[in-house]
Image (cartoon, helix red, strand yellow):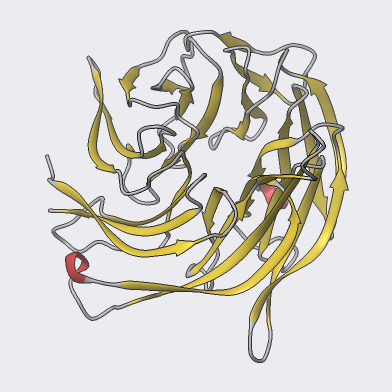
Length: 360
């Protein structure tokens, strides 16, 4: 088993409370990093009303390429900022869509916005392509599906609703919506092996599997988690694995072909707000664990058994661990499979960290 350690490379004050961070997935812009914030600001001292404010900042990362991975350094600089209402989630489209490098953003006023990366003579910036209001509540999460040159988004909201939209020639077109959960639908995600399949999780402690060809009822309901399900991520490595996380402080891994019960479980010491599979190493998972920092987890299985265990921890944030993502930049060498460049953000201390996972 490889020995792994974490190493802080750069720290940024995000000004507002930070909850989402995403590396761009499309070359030549894999050095771009988006970080979003969500903050409740009292309107005045005499009112209980609050205004949800936020912004998304676009950063450029510069990696020193001359050193071995365990000695490389990174600097990041903000190149653009968009002020908005509060932002709950965002995702880059993994491929270009109609010639655009798209960032989808879930806003607290019930809108979804699509932004494109624009290269100017002297700058790079995000430019609004379109937006669409889909909820009277807060949009809480979103995910892309990009099969067969079709571009779709699934969105969950604070009223328990699940919505599917198509992105067609620069316009968001509603395709379907239904009530998926009795309380907040914290998370929604596409299966990476079958884009007819959508997974959702809610404050009703349910993890549900839906087929978009018939959303009148879920194909599968699990209440294996003991508290609200707030993170789901399907692996894109063709291994039929989907990971779920919950306020119950556990991460479960499921085999998408046999969903009767999870094939792995690990306790991580904090509610699991986000999960991300490593872009190259099969079975490696990054978890944002709210009150217990960020954990790197390895999942392995064979015919007779499977294992799920923490291999590294990053505890340099001093507040709720919310946003987390692996960079697409290949941080490895022949001795360091599973290493990676990571961005994480935390809430009340409004911090964005870029750090390295070095494995030997």
